[in-house]
Length: 359
Figure 1: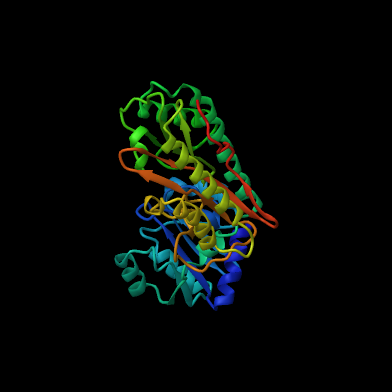
Figure 2 (figure 1 turned 120 degrees about the horizontal axis):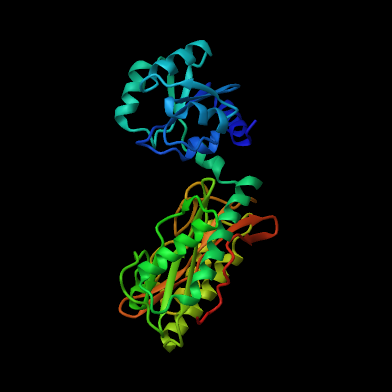
């Protein structure tokens, strides 16, 4: 049986629930459904009991669901599935059913509540908590995505001067697809010169010039799993100010990475990186969190930000460390790696070196 499904059924039993309904129609997305079942299609409902599990899909996915979700009995979806769920709950003695209260729209929930004769209980992000600790297979997929992305960047990096930001983004994205990425992890960021002060700058027609910094934030997706990495490079000798902020960010990233270890919290990672930048006088120029988890979503728990949650690192969790300094009218620097927590600390899954680089 799929490990993720078994862990979820165990969690249901511990909560005193008879089962859970995980809805993933096209209007809602299906990250948690994919995690539990392996199904990669765009629309499905999962009904999971303590011993058995069913995947409700329409004609488009009957065959695909049988292949991708062998631990689930495939049920042909009847309309919006309410009749299917009523029948299964009655026949399987499911009386207390969990649901994802933070994801199901009110309109759908009202229909369920009026029609399905069960006691409903919120799951309170049960699936997300299970997703925090990655399996060996999940880590291998993130590592593969990171390798595809990193190798692609190193291929196109020597030739970016004189190109438009949009052209650089296209070349990087095409290189990732050629290497086997099923999709981009997210829209590629290319920010050159003074545009480096924009943390989430979308590529423009600006031509990359010699003697400036260029920030590239990029990632690949493999079998649903994402990579996330940011590199800042110099296109020739840059000003003393830009060289200095690069040095500060690199020190901050190293401090943040050193704090990634079992028993520490993501907030300690954020504090370690933020202290370096603050001591250098750039605290106001670092306005975002230091990191986030990576997996089936490119931004997922845990989050390394001030005052967010009380999570403690466990072996198998992922986290990015991505401090930055952004100076309007001047430029910016961000350095990011994706890490997995190990028994002795952490391991980088991304692979491009973060030392100061002149191309």
